[in-house]
Length: 126
Length: 182
Image (cartoon, rainbow over the protein chains, first blue to last red):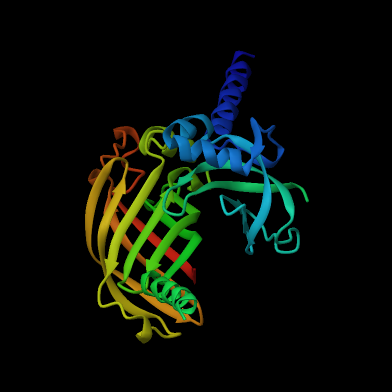
């Protein structure tokens, strides 16, 4: 009887260990956004003080609204300020010049082109 | 007459100062530090910015470190928190120059060039000499691709002893930039 008990405990810890080592990735599309703001106000925070804004927003899930100023196969840009990378093709989903809300994870501020970048994006509304 | 000359001069000035730049915001950079028989240590970043100045061959790239995606979520977490400290050092940059760059000689077929430059990552800067890159041009699109090796110790990235046999000391970086004329 005791043998089985040890075995069950062993299996229990093995499962916990496995789930820790091979845990799932965050799913940004289903996470609740921590911030929701316009692309202009997000950009102004980075222009004002980029290191403070990085501290506040890096790796956070957020919703950003703006007008689509550029569309490519798997990315779009809002107001020439916020670059959003998608995992799949979005060509047929968005139109240039349309008002859009994008949800994604903020990965940082690109000071070469002065754009804020989000990845793992999804479109909330058109 | 002078009403006419002013706008003409203005446009002449504009042409003289405008530099031809080719840009991408979605360049790809990946690295691999795998050791045979152990789980692969590999990540890919496909939101890298790169700018090529076709007047003089100057090239700059900016990688947002948080954008590196691993297959294993825990590995991605450890990479960001313990190894490269991406909260403290969110950017990696490269600034360099392509040697003997000549826009008019670029062709549809890839052409090998050498590139020198400085790579800054994790608060450390390293000079890289003679990176071999392939450049091709198709209408208004220039593609730049290549790979090179760096060492974790060059960038002061500490790998704990316990996993040191599972992560290669030498890291292979490869990149592909599809640049469009701005």
